[in-house]
Length: 352
Image (tube, rainbow, N blue to C red; front, side, top):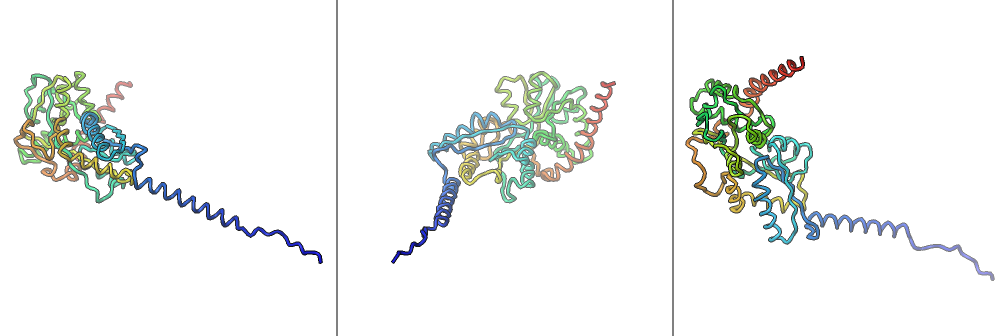
């Protein structure tokens, strides 16, 4: 009997095996990258990117950032790379809203944090923290040739004032509040305060996009006076810039803040970002700010000049009211628009 030949049949289900291997490999890849996101890899440095308003360049680059980096690496054994970007407070807020990858931002005032919340870069329940204070002061040429002691003295004829632009600079906004608020608290008369404010602005000859910009212009010899943060004025003095610092009897105390940019912070970066925020408010961090002439939140320092009648933005109704009434309605409509029209007229005459 001839044996019956049966066709060869491969009983091994290769498609099923291949599919199982693929799924297993895929799961392993997912587990690996999930683990990398949760647990920092000590083989690769973790990175921290800080955006800050312009006057904080020295204190961050020379003090806060290297000290924090050393502390982090000592405590965790993990290498840390820190980078910083500086610019006008309003401008850096705009850049972050447009996608700049900041992990933490330092602003000259809390109003700029609200921009990030509107753009959903910062969660609605994330609160900025005040990292320090700096009164707004008047800077004059050595010897104070115009004998300026208060903001009202800036109404003198022929004084040339340099001013940070409130459209981009937090220092510009704080200066407006100082100029108007000092008059309002003295007279308790909003009309009188407005008139004094407008008279001061008749002497503003040049705007710069930040406090640091107008300081650089002042250093080159332009202008007679400028208004800026006490901190930055003292820093310039230490660099050898010839100037005199006038602390008015009535001036506003600028509150500088820091905030985590939630949308940009990856899970792997969250521990270092939280640690950095804690360091800013720690005794060590506050001491560094104090060493760089920012009035700290926690350490009493007798070296700072006492201010007789200081006030805050809350005394003027808070940031929302102050910005609406003083920056948008008063300054932009009655001063900025007029200045722009005068500039356009001058350019047209030059073209003729």
